[in-house]
Image: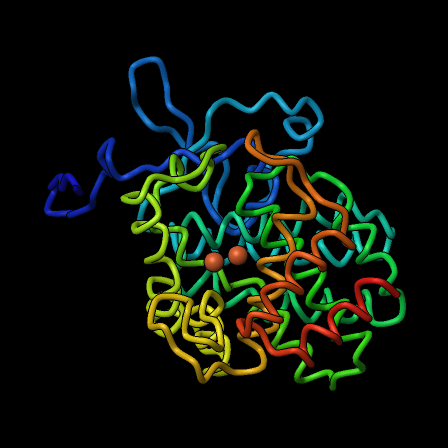
Length: 320
Ligand SMILES: [Fe+2]
Ligand SMILES: [Fe+2]
């Protein structure tokens, strides 16, 4: 809502309370172009930092910012600025070879995309993959270490970053082309974007889901496909993987019980099954070793749910 005031025939607007959105404290230093506001005791919003200026150095040093806000109308531009700044951070962290900090930054990029899947947040992701690919093409062993460290992110974010790291490890190990690898990387990063429309209660449940909850969860491939085709300007394969990563070649998967599934969807589907079993304890089961997990998935391969060749190649890469 905008409140218009008319003084001496000069029309200008004063933003109302609901025209502001509070930003996360961890995001503050990333905003240069975006104007920031603080709230007074009288609940008025005053300018904290002008558009196009960094926050004053003295404030950065003390890190004692009050709760800060952006204008709702700046939301999209702010999201774009934030994702671009996170990509710069990512390149810096990869250069310093700290896998935990890289995982944290990629996690923040994924988190932003999940919180507000829009063109601006999705547009930055090919650059994220470009940086990631270049950073690890010659040092893919670090990707293994990355999956082992905890990032402190939410379950779905941590899972997504692990799936990305394993998928890229597979691409390097199989010596896939740069273009194919980057597309797979992007597909890995976005495969669960549809969970942005699923309740946190379901996503974070440390127990077996009820039938109703599982039905709701099973809608995420279609929701992900819709988000990517609506906002993304990517290769169609990326949306296809979001749609198909829970399908199985014997038709036992969801949402369509499809049997004709692309290589990329099968690969991400395999990694998607492998990741939570290996890297996560749940109260109702313990995390398994990579070997034990692969044995478990092998059973599914033998029952005809996954392609034997893709599984064999994945095993070679995960155990090399
Ligand atoms: Fe999924
Ligand atoms: Fe997943």
